Image (cartoon, rainbow, N blue to C red; front, side, top):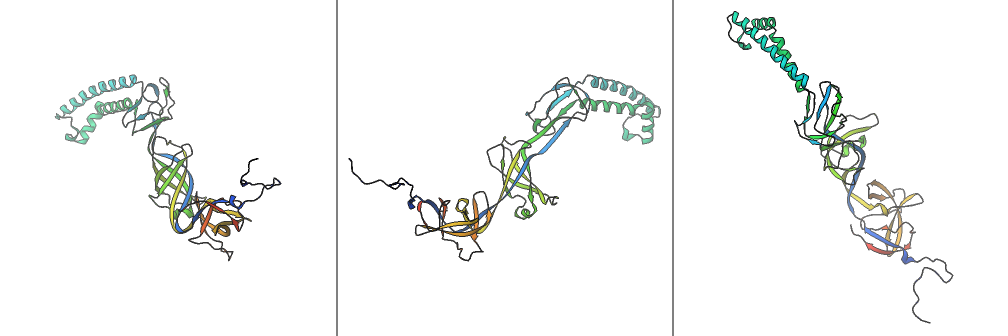
Length: 347
């Protein structure tokens, strides 16, 4: 039989579990006055700053389609066109009618001893009389209308952007005034979100915001571009922020908006440092290898930390700079428990 030193165990000779002080492994920080990053949180939606519904001015058959949904197009680029045959014929006919009317117009002027058709060189009364009697003004108007309609058979991009919401197909009829496609400039977006009126004093134009899309695991930086001066019926204020697109942001995306403001002179602890005892908030302070709880109040909160003060309703509650605070391993601690410091974290 081999002899040796007995190993440490968590069981006594009866096989029952026994409590070992050295099992209370904790991590700590030394408390100090520091800046607290106060957070304002809201949900918002990404909106294109420049967005246009493209429409045809004429009802006719779609002859050519040069783009599809998702295509990037440049300002002035041809997007689609209708069948132009009848519009070209109308222009040609109007040009012929104008030529006839012009000959008659010139003859009438010559008969009055006027050898120019320059409108600025002829008295208005004579010009109006001659152009009306010969049909010159009506023929000129008809040509302008025919040329406009021929131009309306094409739609072009009014700005650089991406094509969306296009559902028409070649040789289908398109209706004048109905949305044919949507053009979106997605290089820079605005995020629209609401803050409650009590939070408005904590933000200003150009305040930095963090934007986290629900569908993209990435954080974007932006800045506030406008704050609506009117309070909504539900006590909220509409705020907008610019954000540059890296290609992953889409029109209509839902996002989480976070605005941080640095507040000086706070006692800041990780959220894990505050635990509940009898429905009260408690911190554990470390003294001479033992944990002692003290009641506190959390006055501010962000995603990772609390700003704390001693509980004003308990005279024996004390906490201040220089105190050593237990941040982990405190869930099952009792007052006056022995602890073993695993890691010392200095902030």
